[in-house]
Image 1 (tube, helix red, strand yellow):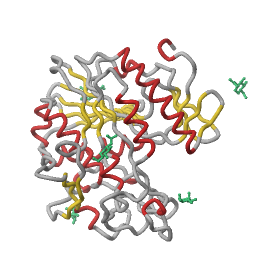
Image 2 (cartoon, helix red, strand yellow; image 1 turned 90 degrees about the vertical axis):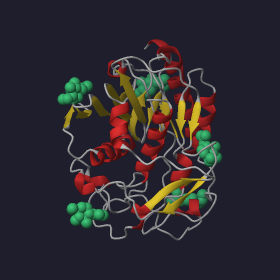
Image 3 (cartoon, helix red, strand yellow; image 1 turned 135 degrees about the vertical axis):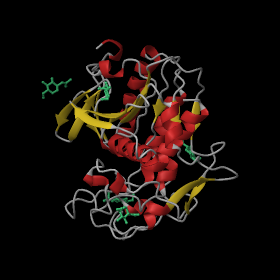
Image 4 (tube, rainbow, N blue to C red; image 1 turned 30 degrees about the vertical axis):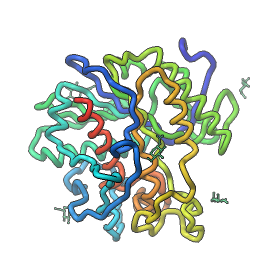
Length: 352
Ligand SMILES: *[C@@H]1O[C@H](CO)[C@@H](O)[C@H](O)[C@H]1NC(C)=O
Ligand SMILES: *[C@@H]1O[C@H](CO)[C@@H](O)[C@H](O)[C@H]1NC(C)=O
Ligand SMILES: *[C@@H]1O[C@H](CO)[C@@H](O)[C@H](O)[C@H]1NC(C)=O
Ligand SMILES: *[C@@H]1O[C@H](CO)[C@@H](O)[C@H](O)[C@H]1NC(C)=O
Ligand SMILES: *[C@@H]1O[C@H](CO)[C@@H](O)[C@H](O)[C@H]1NC(C)=O
């Protein structure tokens, strides 16, 4: 109850929070930034890089089947080979797993959210483990909290399924997050970094919003979250990231191939300089809300670069075959590895 006032329900498909908890001392001051993965917020392109992917999923037996497209029978492999190249004289840093662990030593990092949070957390754990294949690690899941720990470094990379501040309830349209509930707040005590992303259906009271109305609800939900962050999170101890919106490619009209069957059989990134459907409306909402915050949230701009990756989804190579067409999650290795490079870049630039 408390800071949230009236009940707001949010049905989400994707909600990601990344939390880094400093067990030792707090890090220094932080500035509000948009992390676009580029120098100066300009665009970039996906370039073929034969040194990619960053890892072989067979080295990470804990990866879930739904992301292991090759193992599920996907035959084309070019989609594994693309590196995001920011425009100009800029590059994303090469991921240095040892530097990452060293920078995070003594800290807890936590993704919280739904399956796209899982997607990115699994990518990160595999990237790190590949860099330090001989490091001891433990991996446990208890009561929705997955804990991937490197004891020698004192680093815990965690994923908490579902709710941040909120309870999951079932509705006729899917699952809903109650943004007025703080039942999970204990999980977040001492948190340093939070990252959110997009929500599919939103319900306030008994009314369910879809399409344009859902953007209104999305904005309300974000504002509720913003109130909590602004009033309850200490910027000297906590870095808050907003994940940005992970675009789906369920409707090929969005990229002007109306005859295509969603993302099925897409084998390379779109070779266009501008995504035909334009910016994601949810992204614009997020941008507006986050700019209004007093808390210096860092916005991870994953939307723009991911929009071009129509080839990056499991399509029918996700949940074990042809039952489902998954054009919202991402194959691993794949696009979330780049999100983690942007995260890594941001953490390195701010001395963790
Ligand atoms: C993300 O980056 C793109 C390309 O630089 C930009 O057009 C867009 O406004 C950015 N989005 C946000 C939410 O900052
Ligand atoms: C991943 O490793 C396995 C086992 O070592 C190997 O058979 C496979 O070819 C590798 N895959 C890629 C894409 O390199
Ligand atoms: C995660 O696992 C490590 C190693 O087993 C343990 O020390 C730590 O307490 C665990 N963290 C949580 C939050 O359970
Ligand atoms: C919501 O629906 C329930 C059950 O249909 C009803 O009892 C309740 O009064 C409704 N609340 C509002 C605010 O409309
Ligand atoms: C895909 O998008 C087009 C253009 O916006 C729209 O007319 C069509 O109904 C959409 N198809 C589906 C299956 O939602």
